[in-house]
Length: 159
Ligand SMILES: [Zn+2]
Image (cartoon, rainbow, N blue to C red; front, side, top):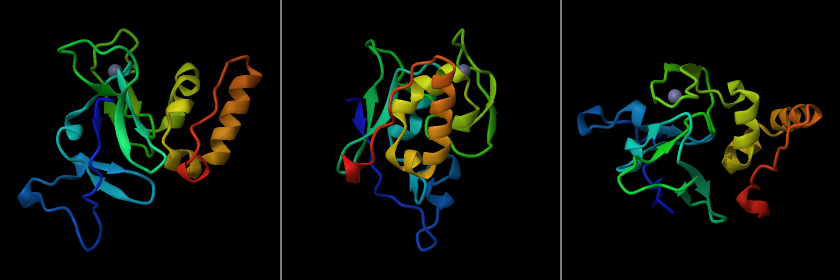
């Protein structure tokens, strides 16, 4: 495990962002039915198209950043923002990886096929629940074309 994510600061109508206190929308994480203001250090985790970490959810709902592959001393922790990515935000990536997707949207379903297959088991339970039907269609389609796709992680209430 790299770190446990502090999800306590919810952004709601009653508790909106306070820019004077350094609270900004680009530090928010949209988790389906709730918006969380990311704390330090997790808010500084950058995107990389071939990341070394991802967010895992324990059966009790705690989110943790965990290693996706070997992480070497001094190496920057990175996640792929398209995992659990919703919406049509477009950004130009300059992560420098040879397989960088460059201009791409945050939408998980816009990923190339091999990344869809690779990331489906890493999706968060809320994302799997919200997009259950579409994920089923994607998995069927990938399998029909001979790709190997694992099951998505199960939501905590059925684990
Ligand atoms: Zn990139």
